[in-house]
Image 1: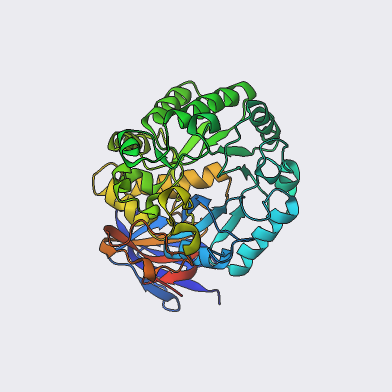
Image 2 (image 1 turned 120 degrees about the horizontal axis):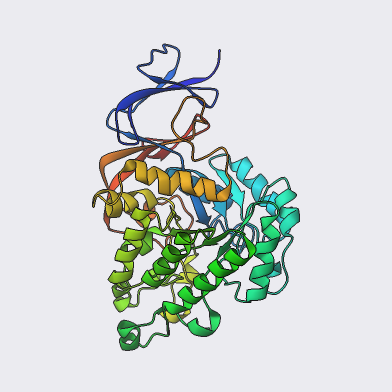
Length: 429
């Protein structure tokens, strides 16, 4: 007898309701299904999506297990509806060798809640000078395909060019933290504008992001390789992306949930919860990012989940660590901003939070259509629910949650990884 689960009466991508029979981790039948021996998940009123994929997660292990571990980050991801996450390389030690990548990969498999795919550093020690073991990481058991010095920009154009040339040989992609260090400055901590001047906070202008994006799309054009823009945050970046894609340049981009909703106005209270890199931007940038996500100029939503221990975050604004939590709230934020406004339907959410991220990352077991024969990586969402976020309810080890006290639309009801429920009724199984 094979293990079977029957998801009863789910709305597939927000369309017609149907039953899904899952057998041995694969969708075996779709329609009106009778399976008396199957375990039943009642899904009437729920929307079935392919399991969500996050291109940009900080799991902090190894090195900062006081802020997050691969296990607790995996738990947060599963609660948020994710079945795969990409673990960024700025750990301690840095994920810049095949051995380090395999350790992250193996810890993710041991946790077993989501597929944890390590991201390799572009440069050794994130130093920006010498390329890391790109080929060895790609050929390792971890099968690394995405490389990023996130937290730092690969500012040297020659190094960036060499990285793009190198990863082209095995179909890899370089994900760039676009922040010109000279334009942004070493002490900048918020968007440069009228508010930063009034608050007396060192600001970095949007152009510090935009010039790196413009440079890198031209390097991608020159090398014929792929570049990915991490956490796009300005209208100017959207303009560059739209122009580059119009020319057929191999560039993709992501936007975070917080850049789709929160604005720099929140900094007026000096609350370090809202200190993030790149910084929150004005409303006109937020509107441009929403439009770009809806029309495909921006390909994906990525959380940039960045947990921090209290002693790193609870400082004066200038001295506090950059970053916000995001895994558990990403889907409700996107539903609130994009679905409720009509900018995306649920099929669009599947595109930007599952199919496109899986394609960019080269994750062959994720991002599939809900179809017979596809891996049963699924997220069931209650579109009628509302969630009032309480940071103390988080399964993350950290509490730097920018959504605390906010009411958001939609809620993740269940997450299934290869047919095995990891979350049911919004709780870890």
